[in-house]
Image (cartoon, rainbow, N blue to C red):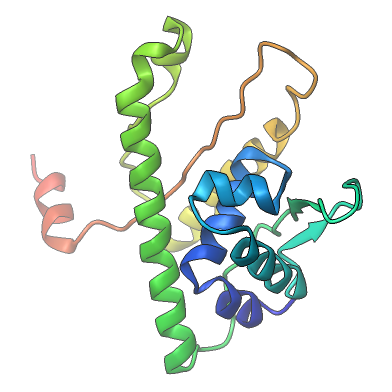
Length: 188
């Protein structure tokens, strides 16, 4: 899969939501996805095939008849990073996708805040929003990201088969602070 091809395929609201739904909630049929995303089965089927063409999802071959069961493919840790400069269309697609991802994160965070009281105390204490400011060089933030991805990979499937395990999505977002804020924070 070319990162540019995947980027172009994902720069569509329904496709990005389909991939997110499969990544977070696991395998599903086009009908189940249409219900979850409040759209039509024909649309979900069409866009799932488009995602499959670029290697982001696949038919598990575990469905029967027309009830195909889809799953998201694991993305490599560098997915979304393109070494060469993007042309204007690809850059716009990347920006749209990042903003769509941010909106999706916002929806999930709002949902947690609204529903957190329905979870047991241990879940309420361990889940939620937080930030961790650090002072790093560009090389160090690259190493930090790699270490975080390594930790997340260790936990990816550790709870399968455990009835007490819940699927959890962990969002990471390393953002440099504007120089004016950084300078003020460094002053005594």
